[in-house]
Each structure stands twice: as C-alpha cells, then as structure tokens.
Amino acid sequence: MSITCGIDWAEDHHDIALVDEQGKVLARARIGADVAGYTALVELITTNGGSPEQTAVAIETDKNLLVVALAGAGFTVYPINPRAMARYRERHVQAGSKSDAGDAAVLAHILRTDQHMHRPLPRNTDLALAIKALARQHQEAIWALHQTTSRLRSVLLEFYPQALKAFPKLTHHAATTILGAAPTPAAGSRLTRRRVEALLRKCGRRNDPALVDHVLTALKAPTLRQPPAVEEALGLATRGLLEIISSMRSSVDALEAELAREFGRHPLAPVLRSAPGLGPVLAARVLAELGDDPARFTSVKGVRAFAGTAPVTRASGKSHYVKARKVRNKRLSDACHWWAFSALTWSPAARAHYDRRRAAGDHHNAALRNLANKLIGRMWWCLSHNQPWDEDAAWPDLIPAAA
Image (cartoon, rainbow, N blue to C red; front, side):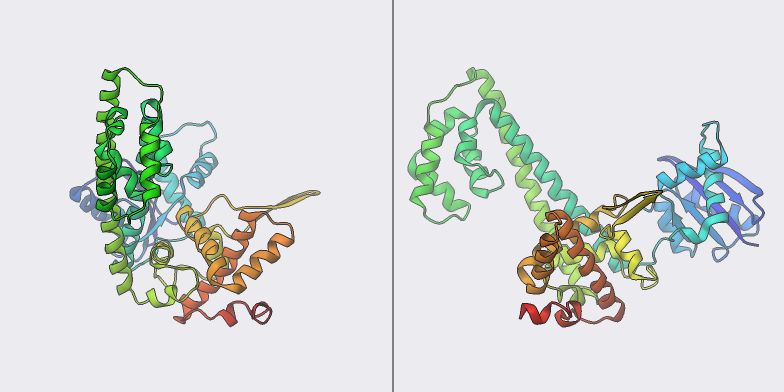
C-alpha cells in the first residue's frame, strides 16, 4: 500500500500524519527531534503498511537532521515551500485556523494529490553535500565580515572620522593594522612616520611615501573631539571589532582553502572551471546549488527557473508583461549574476551578447540576467554530458563576429 507522510517540524519536536491513497488519515503522532523520535517515526510507518520505497515524506525544510536520516534510509523526501504550504492550508481550512497536527496532515495530502508537481530532495553525493556546506558557510562568513566592517565604520563616525579619511576602504589590511595600533584620535595623533612605515611593512604593503604622508596628514588633522572618557570607551569597542574582523578573515581564508580542496576532488570540477568567468569559488557555488544528482532536472527550463534567470510572464485579459523571477534559489542566482559579470571580461562572445541586449534597451541587470540565462543553459548541457565548455558551441551566432 502506498502512503504519504507529512511532518510539521519544530526545534524540539515534530508532528506526524500518515495518509493513505483514499485520503484517510491512518495515524497521527508527535515525536521528539532525536534518535528515539526517528525510530518511532519509522515504526509508525511500518506498522501502517508503509516502507521506504512506498512512502513519500513531505516536510517544509531540507536542512533538518531528520531529513538526512530519512533520505539515508531510502525514503523519498519532498521539501515543500512554506509559501506553497500556506496556500494548500487555505484549500483545506477556509476559516483560518492552524495547528501543527493539522499542518502535518495538509503536507501528507499535498503529496497524495500533487506529488508530481513537487521536486524531491536530490540524491547528491556526500562530496557534493560537503561542497555545499563549505560554499554556503564561506559566503555566510563573508557577509558577516562585511556587516562587522560596516559596524566598525559606524563606530568610527561617532568619534574618529579622520580614520575614515585616512582609510576610505576599511577592508584593506593596512587600515585594520594601523587602526589596531592607533584606535583613538589621541593615539592617531601620536603616530610617527617610522611607526606608520613599520605597520605598513607588517601588513605587506610596499614602501609608499605618498601613502604614509596621506595617513599622517589625515590622522593628525584638527577635528572635533568627544570627551576623553567617551573616546576611550569607543576606542575599546574599536579594538574589539578589529579583533573580530581579524578572526573572521582567518575563518574566511580557512573555509576558502578547504572549499577549493574539496571542489578540486569532484569529477565535475574540470567541466565547471572550463567555462570563462568561473573561478574556483564561483564554480564551487554553482555546483553546490545545482548538486550532482543527474536526475534532479529533466530539462534546461527547470535549471533556468531554479537559478532565477528565466523570466516570468503574467498575462490576463489585455495585460501581458514579462518580469524577473522572484521565487528562485537566491544563492545560485547570485553566483550566476557574478559569473555573467566576470564573463564580460573573459569571453568576447559573452560581451557581444551583453552589448546586444543593452542596445536593445535592457538595463544592466536585465542584460546580465539574460546573459546568465544563456550561460547556465549551456553549462547544464556540459554537466549532463560531462563535456568541457566550448565557446563555438555556446555562441554559434556570435563567435565569427567576435573573432
């Protein structure tokens, strides 16, 4: 007998509902988010005549340890978009009521009636999953570093604006090195030329008298000041933020090195790296989001929709317009955006395509999105056939003109 299982998950427990082919709820339960809960779930499915091969599982996430355990046991897991879940709930309950047990049943009914409309969890290899984890954490670490740097800028604006004149870009190592030695206006005013030169050498900068003059002039310039006690307090905050930034940089470098190592071991790495504009980090991000399950996408349309490069058409009556796709894998969309931007430099044909779209009236982002749509479509073919990128095949109508 084929049954469907719906799981409404929470941090410390999960509500379960099993539904048969006729829509009858066979069982309900609440299990813990631990090994005992997983064991109870499998026993409940088995007791009601289900098996890993015959039981489809619907859940609103793909990042839960229960999902990993179910997929490892052979169950087909369907991550359901919470937005879709909300619409299905309205189909079953018009009064607006909601409960965890009711949501579990709704999830089970989704697969009972519309299983063919939803995409199952891809069966990626362990190596691909490791690359995905590293790629996402590397990106998260970069975002966190940018946020902390912005926080440092905000603190400096309160009491040390001359530091921002000396170092407009706080991401530079020279900025954090010198600010670490002079975190307050008083300390900055005491810096000597010899000390600044030594600090610049410490962070790897070449001997640049013009830069030394610029730093000293900016830090020693007359300016409005906070009371001494306030300066010391904000200087302490500045030291703390500089230490955090240093630690974050080390974390980003470590994640990037491990990401490059793991990505280099994957069989599809040479295919991805063969495309113009795809460096090791961007290529790893593309692989991380697409995965290496050959059965995940049945056509290039699905890949383009997943990446968000394919437009959406809205037509009703006399109204008809095309707009950018908002529901997409935002990480893959971001990687494709920067891939297209980089390809403008590395591929004359890609540049020619972008220029043609701009001449047709597209703004910058729309032209890049159209270019990314072309790139991701060709890359899907390359990955499907395990063939390297071929510029002649990718741009048959532009290569002669570009040459």
